[in-house]
Image 1 (cartoon, rainbow, N blue to C red):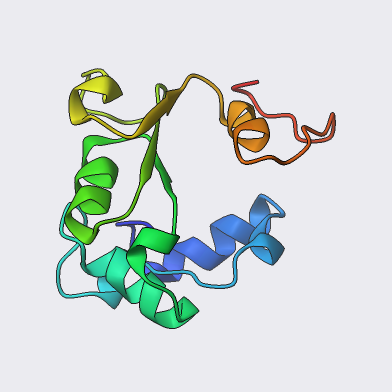
Image 2: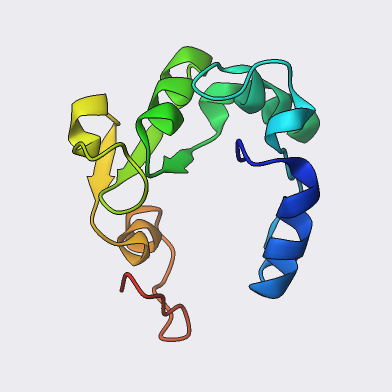
Length: 120
C-alpha cells in the first residue's frame, strides 16, 4: 500500500525482486482518499478478507501511522524514511524499530542472514 500511482508500483517491486511477497498491491489512485485517510488500509483488509485490526501496518511516515490509527490497525513505525523531518515517535505508533530486521523476531519469525537491507 502506497500513495504512489499504481502503474509505478508493480515495476518497482519487480525491479527489487520482491513482487512475489505481495498478494495485494494498492496504489494511491486505487482509492478516493490516500493516506492518512484509512481508505487504503480498508481496501487491503477487504481484498484479504480480514478486519483492519488483524493486519499490521509497518510504515516510516506520519501518514502511515495516522492511516493505521484511523482504520483501527496496529502499527510499527520505522525511524528511517520519509517523515517530514520529524521523529516517527511523534505519530505514536504501537511499536518503534530502527531497523526492519528487528520486526521478524518480534513477530516470532527467525531472522535470516539473507534478509539484508541497507538499514540492517
